[in-house]
Image (cartoon, rainbow over the protein chains, first blue to last red):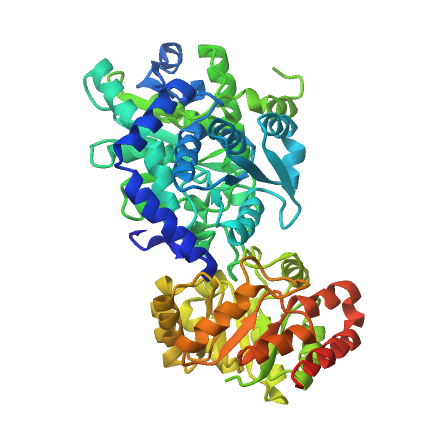
Length: 388
Length: 250
């Protein structure tokens, strides 16, 4: 299945059968009552769903424009939306009879969420993490180990997220008979972008119900950050056929003209990597470029194929926010609302704050607050020095 | 394209354009077909040895156009067929038709695109047909029979059988999966069959040819020598290829 020309199944031959097996299992299970019941049970009682849709009144008043609502995925167990997908896929793996999970992780959030789901379901967990990220994110490495997972540092390439994905794929091609590869975003070969989107769509479904209850109408704009794009896809998807403006915010890093960013939709070209046709940051020869973002979770040279499609058909728009703007939003929300947002989510917030002031007071913006920002204290302290 | 053949692999530009030409000259003395790899920033299907070789090549500053020049220079005074091995993104970035045309003009005889399975290969097959570029597709121990038939049909050069579950790289012993796959492929495929991944010794070459393979591919065992000996590897590669060639005597 493709999204226009995007997506697909660009993998070496050995992975074709495991992907077909996964597709078949997912197609059978996704409408299975027992599976849905179990998933719902864990999302409710383990992950902490539904999450609130919170009217950020202080922030709204301070900016003086559109009403800003926050979808509080930061309140989930694990501190981010990642758990929606890992619980779903771990359950799927269990139904498929697999005994082991592998996953890639950048900052460690998806690794932690996978380790939790693995512990919950009694599955062995191995996490691939770029060696550079292992050094930068020591607390999360410890957290994963604490949860019983094994963390494998990846020394190859740029020693970051994309190399961790390469290494996980290398593992999977040798171990697929008993291993499920639990991809953490709406990326990779079919059926992953669809599976991850479906598991994350609970965010959008809840948001729709909640905003209708509170405001009696749909929001005017939904804003979400986009690295691989799973939290954005999750909140966008149930609104695709509604008259709602959808904005994905990419990591502009030091600025799009500096080459030090991760904004593949804003500044990349079409290409093929990690099993999918999508947009990638690459040179003229198709070599994938190193990326940068203050938010480790956005530091990826590609993006999910469905986002590439939504951009192509004009259904969603994609913009970039710099490190500096994201950092300002991080500080602003912490002070005005007492909520410390993840640096990733701060990108979405920064853009929402930018457009809110030019909108009228009866208009509504929903920001997907995809994760909480305690994990980023080290980065923020480094960036600010002592200058709070 | 192959018949009781030794097929050897190096990565273009590892460690330099000039040395690649020297390696190709040595390889051509002992092998019937040469696989030349285009280095890629993310060689997902390759094990550590070839992966590192891709990084060395990229570090030397090699570009896709240089790879075509290497082939052109080599073909000036050699007849050994060249199979260009690549990941799909360098092909996609250049434009499929451009890439195949440029490759063919430089003297490339066949192409193997590692991450382009049948599902995504329709246009590629058409373009290769148009430019008389031979195609090589991979088959794996878990490829079902009907799919093996389709892979055979799509491969105008030969079918490349992956000998195991995993990435490229040397192994002490051949996997039993290799022999099962050769047996199955022989009953289904009409094109010649090459076997690769994990093949590193003359003994392996002999065992696989005896089991019915038409060609055997050795990559990592050669690339490893380049990793260890760098610019001084020419002689070592010569020795290794001579040893591998012994595998054909039985």
